[in-house]
Image (tube, rainbow, N blue to C red; front, side):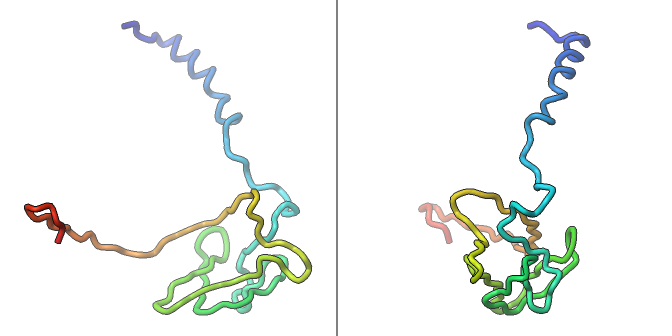
Length: 126
């Protein structure tokens, strides 16, 4: 088996270094003209979108400064929701299913406990 010399490693690195600039995911556009809608959650009293569209309903919501700004927190022992129209009365779509990207931060705050599963001799779990 042949071994790589330091010169071959150097040539390999020089050839592969430009690849990350060429092969990467598309970034967020610099302007918001391509967004269907946006939620920065700055208005935590009425939960309007950044385009000032009001939600259909909301209940048991709170906010946090987690991440790059204000974050919506759904942390309630009872039902919590935030609902918007798919199409606003102005005709603006909030979501399209044919193509697009959803960008969001998700920070789970739950704790779980591992539960052991006992297997009996006949293969039935108890």
